[in-house]
Image 1 (tube, rainbow, N blue to C red):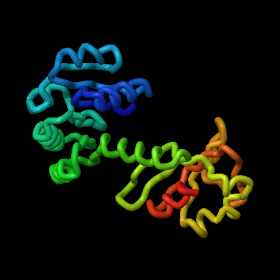
Image 2: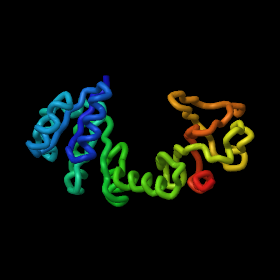
Image 3: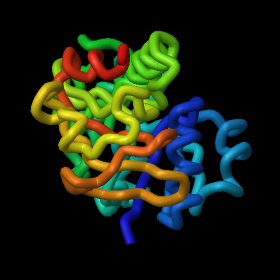
Image 4: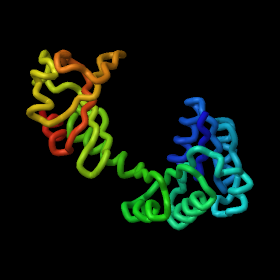
Length: 215
């Protein structure tokens, strides 16, 4: 079973730690604020008050033995960068670091973060897409040019098969799955029909995806 450590118990870090614990994984929560430790202690495997910038303290916790360590430190960019450096120097296999800005993220990548996440930016993008189109349920940016879109089937596609909808041929979009109530059709065939209220999980270029958002 994978073991996770989460450093920094703001809203993001707390959410990640609690969710991983609910999924059945072992989670160590770390923060230098005793109040935050007390708030989460019953929702994770272990919760410890430690200054994560203290290399000896991290060693004592056996931090290098964790499969993934999430650096969820809030507004202190310098601290998040320093902790990321320490974790990689101590031999942590996978460090996921939260970034506030693009520049912050680039620095985290340079100092060794294996994955950088932008919770505020990504949530902003999802909200914007949901506001622009009432059909869009979720939007996940894979790169500056490509995304995954979860969208309620536009009326023009209802009653057609995937092939007849020309989503791939005309829109250059690949439908990875169709959600139909509690059923999920993974890798649907070209002959699968699209029904009213189906939710299409599609991947493609952002410009192409915007076309079905509008439709």
